[in-house]
Image (cartoon, rainbow, N blue to C red; front, side):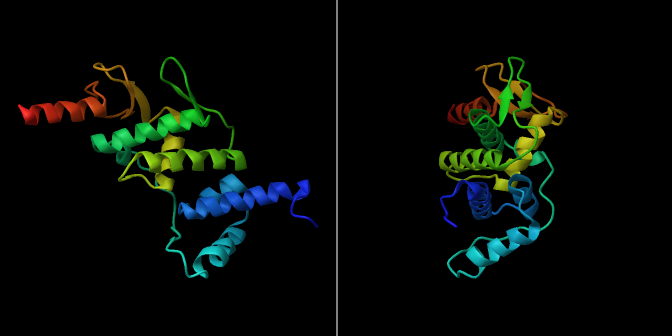
Length: 190
């Protein structure tokens, strides 16, 4: 048995993705959906490579993934970060945004390639924001919510024509979070 044999490349890719997602503190169910590994295998991987190594401060989150949407739109900073993630999801071909700002998922169901693309988008998000407000699980929730075009949607700013994440059931002033922050700062200066 050689590690380079093609017959093991699928399993190796699943395992590498599981390690990558564990580093982002993804929940077991999220890892399972993308890798196809069993819950027991995921827990043993964490125990072997992270918990027992003594070098890591990576925690295992328990319980269900977050499902609320208020985190994405509760203030302009979170809205900007949510919008950044949606743009990265689109750039990573996880979603497609049509000319009417409707979001369409590009994958019928998560798989290993989907998981790697999600990790790349999240890692890019971490590089772009000094103080990230959204964990990997919140990014997973955002991807699922925005793909449904139900509670969250992409609105267009009346000032700069930029698209931004907005709550479908909240009053929308038609101003993107960047213009809102800019307007608040101009008001303070005068």
